[in-house]
Image (cartoon, rainbow, N blue to C red):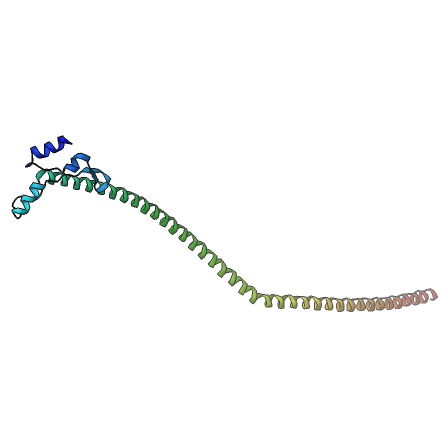
Length: 194
């Protein structure tokens, strides 16, 4: 404690450090969380105020320290910004991949939808054709069925007629044969009797 007081009393013009700071080596947290020792140049500050700014308020060392601190803060901020940017770029790239995949899925779904719509249109056309063709086919089938029945009836009638005609012709043939036989018998008897 005596050393700090002696130093301050021996060199009052250079720069004063508060005795409290020197005794407890008080440190304050600056920006970014680093520990800094607080230095106060009381005489320079007083002279600067007294000369209305002719003597600069801060010494070269203090300006340099402040500039270095600002530079370190700027570098830290830049590094933080760069890591944030790279993380954002990675998220953007992943999002673009998801968008690309979603676009491909949407295109595939659109193709499937178009294909199913075409199939539905074809099915509807076929149903329409079937609906149109069904009465025609039924009528044709009914006509064919009726024609088959009519043909069968005609066939039965023709068989009956043919049977009757065959019986008639058999009867006629029998009669002719009988009459031919009787004529032949008569001719033989007349030839014998002569």
